[in-house]
Image 1: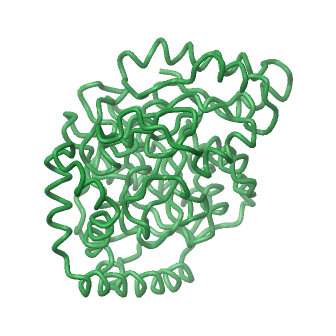
Image 2: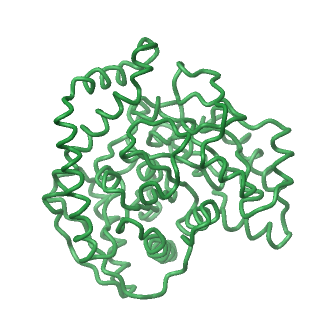
Length: 417
């Protein structure tokens, strides 16, 4: 299973060894070969769109991009993973899609999402083993990159929906600092948590793609300065498999051999409290965000989502306000934490992708960093196991470029060993 490299395609186009139209055509050929088994896409662009975008200029010219189907697109149906919105056609592109088009990118199609980006999964399977989940809710985006169909895909994370699927599928996933990429035109679940993210074959690829898409300098090379990298010690609060723990230790060892200072950092009490209130924040806001769907078409919601929204509608506003205060205290504590360390190293998931497609896995290793708004990135850290294991690296809010440079360095060394 060979993944498409964003940087290699971009460089081939820049050196005139490949035209944008040829690069786009190659993506459709890969989709034709793979998606009948993976089920990553809900709809693909028509021939007129392919021809139009094959003639585009810009840093994303020739790059075929999958867009999670909770992101509005004016020239594709956007169903939000729900029968309520079957054949729904938004009037305008979401901001991220407009950004992509302005840079010459080609939206190849919409990728499968869990229902309204919650927990009820779609039909996508894990490219490494079809009996296992690809994760969620950005299942189609992660699987499309992992299966070699596209070099870049867009997802969202409210708990762990970028980092966890990337880990399960063995690719790089990047959740930027909160609101670095605008979420205008993205179906809201939780307005204080929802974050857009990117999937690509490697950290260097995802950094280059993020830089080209946003116009920010997010793909700067590592300056070789030793960093303070902390192994996150949560005192066993979160589940972690022995293989995942070994993958974290492996990357920590590489970091030490590269000259970085590696320490162990105990999870602060303020962050433990915030982690425990993530669910209340998410559910309270979800009940408000999806009140229209609950009022007008509850019978078209899955039992799991309907029950969750009914329960969340009974949460008292004072409890929600208390959770917001707890989250604020944790964000202040994060400032102090990142005065002491540059990078936090932790599992990207509890372990490898679970067997079966009924569950998308647990976000327990990701949700704190989503709530804090910190940038996070993952890459494959195991030595060619049957199912991938990704580690998670996080940094101070706004230090996305530092994080990506450090992760790209460690990934490159890891792959070379």
